[in-house]
Amino acid sequence: MPTTSSRPVPSGRRVLVIGATGLVGREVVRALRERGATPAVLVRDPARLGSREGVEVVVGDLRDAASVRRAVAGADVVFHVSPHEPDEVALTTTVVEACEAAGTRLVFAGVHAVGRTALHGWLLRRLYGVLLPRYRGKLALARRVERSATTPVVLVPSNFMQNDEVLLDVLRAGEHVHPAHPKGLNRVDLRDLGEVAARILLDPEFPSGTHAVVGPRSLTGPECARIWSEALGHPVAYRGDDDEALDRALRAHLTGHRLEDWRSSMRVIRRMAVVATPAQLADTERLLGRRPTDLREMAARVVAEHAVGVG
Image (tube, rainbow, N blue to C red):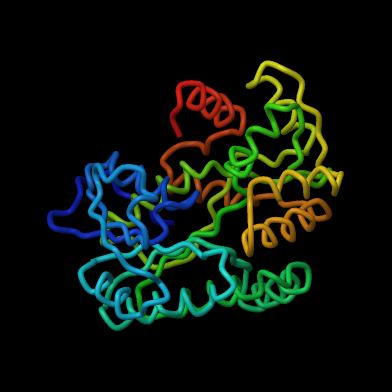
């Protein structure tokens, strides 16, 4: 199994990050900058970046195919994450086609059904399509990228720990509304995903392939609530089985397609255990060069960062 390289940034290698203001993209940009790279970031509104330090701003819109082609043509490798948009299939297709036309490598992060065999993968996609009809487009996108002429690397993260950070004020109010099955929910720190993506983006020799990126263990909802109780220093009750509490929290923080995607997926993971296989954990450890971050570590970091106005 390949490992990522710690070699210096290849001279003149240009990395383009699409979606740099999102939960995943910001961590990829952070990790690239920590490795001495100056990534280009494709954004519609540069003001949403907060700071332009350490990045090259490229103004463009995924709904403007010409602007995407121009941005991609100047890059050696592109990072793209599956968006929460009604036209997500068309948007990602635009990125894939631009990369294929330019001969540019694509590193993609999104929802995918990774099977042990081709038949197992097909069966998983069928199952996920039934359980998560809103995610059928995302599943199709990952297959499109996987089969593309972009020397692709597809990264498939488990449940984001940063979902809790989005709902941090709800946690501070004493409620953990994020559902989890009683048999557990594997959760990954997006900083780990950012590190994996950055290492691959900066390594021109990294082979094409698909990799799950997972956390060190699967957690129940009450376990997550206890971890946040410790981090915040006050009781946090698990309310992940309460639809009213979940909907109230999500509506206060999300809108549109993203709101409906989150609502749909969270109701499914309440009923479905999400665990990582030993092979997936071992692969993640190889890609990171260390053990993945535990939720307890991530929660302590987030509380400290928000206490000083960082993050």
